[in-house]
Length: 86
Image (cartoon, rainbow, N blue to C red; front, side):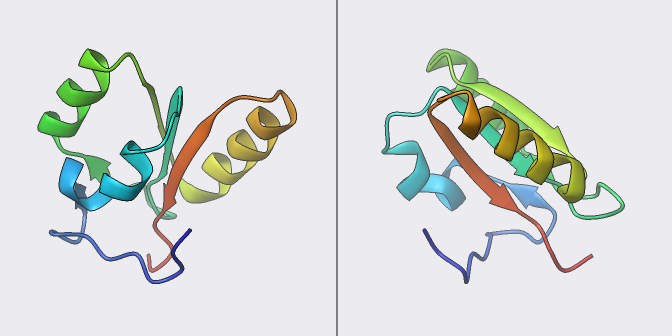
């Protein structure tokens, strides 16, 4: 877990940005897109996740946190990144 997560590009998330998370055994990746919903997975990351059969959930951060907490209680194997700066 990293509290100082920075991405290659501010509002796009690439596979390289999530190497630590993607090396874990996860079934769902949750991305908190910031309050206005500007941060999104790059198409190359979306394609990679599809190939690995990892579901992607992208929501504004407050909703993404609620979804994360719900899925943790269900015992799902999760990875997540939450954009907090906007």
